[in-house]
Length: 243
Figure 1: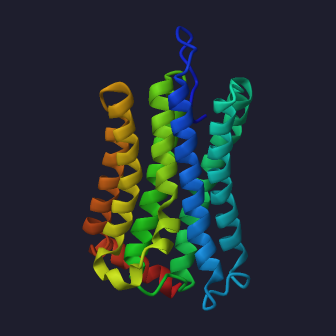
Figure 2: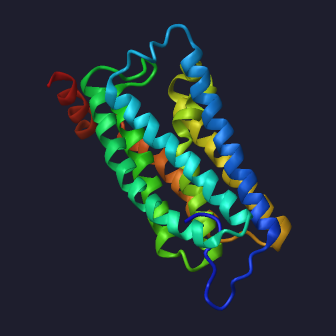
């Protein structure tokens, strides 16, 4: 998975592409570590006393970030065979993240562990939408793994979606009120725009994979804005809090 799985007819990779995707994976890793590091350091956050499912969820999602970084390191070093072999683990990890993401969100609403600046219905839509889009982009990248250009860009866009909880911890969401989800979506789009600018500079055009990546982030935000306060979502959130 990730950066390069070449077509049989074209096995050479652009060295600048390898360096760029490694740089992006490094930037994503730093962002995630910084976001959760700040969260853990806050005295009002009782990180150690969080339920077990929270720690499992966090560990598995952080494992994906490290997996993506390692995959790009392997490609940069030319270890394509190891990259491909490890990709099988990535498919299994994606499935685990999809299940854990939905279950953890539901439990957070049920156990009243939603951040106070998020209405439960908004939190429900935000987290479920993000993990579904991550899984969709990632599995699309797997299907297109023999097309290096599509594969590595869709993998990048999928991993950018995983950043949203960490990015939310770096932004002053309690001060942004109803604009908090828009701020996170805008932050995610910054990473996609950087990748698009690289494409434009290096290749003279932006690859269409980024239209899917950017479009998915925009779609997620529109779903959040459009669904969070609809009667069905409010009913589900209310039911979960009462059970």
